[in-house]
Length: 382
Image (cartoon, rainbow, N blue to C red; front, side, top):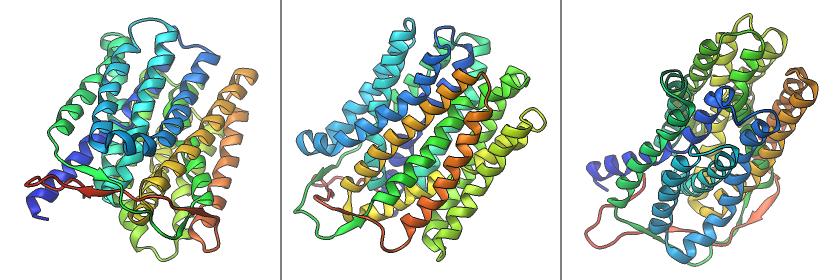
């Protein structure tokens, strides 16, 4: 592969990855200002993306096997454009349906990208940048215009990615079944617990801070800071995952900032909101770790591992996020939900240790996907 081809392939992965989170982080940033999203509807809106992404992840291998990867991703990006634009045209029902459809499209991309990226930081960096942009730009757009425009503008970003992908040649075929098995159960639980904490931060951080008396603009800026602090972690952690011999220590180190940030939000949220937000942002490194681990193991087990771990993991996270939202609705405070988050972080460390240790549960690997290039076409992938 030439240097020029590698650069183009990395750019494609980066552009696609940018679209994996703005649909969610923009919703979290605008949620307190959406009149049709109150109480239980707000809790469902935070949990819904996880269930939709999980269900979509399960169906991705089946879809790819029948219509081909390039066409599948093209349709997914088109669906993302339409759903992001459509969810802002009415009340709570279009918002719920549009968010669900957007996240189903995101599920297809999110399941495919670990296999395409092969451990490249372009994947996690693009994901982190998209998360940051959604959190940073949306509050400003809400204040200058409306929540509808603030959420709808992310359809333009998806449309640009759609055009880039349409001009990217390449296809994936399914060779004979891969032999052997791969560790999956502990990794799935680990991914689910990490995703629970990640989506809670993206969905509820501004609300937690605003309920504690932090001004709305500051609360929105804190979410943007949290996402921005995750950017260097998304860049650095893939390399750490490859190099650290003691993976359990890495799991603990990456979970520590979230423990600090969540404890601060529990004890004194308004005392140092910037510090707690920054700490939860550094905790995003755990997500980069598990995605890189999936990507590296997918070199042999391919799409099946990514689909199972992300599909089941996101469903687990959806129930965790909904439970926290329900506890907040019932209690009227964030104390009980944040105590639950601390328990989830403890489970994250334990499941992470199990995922990187020998003797974890094994999942049979059925099929692998490899790149098949058209004649005279550049290679796609990194």
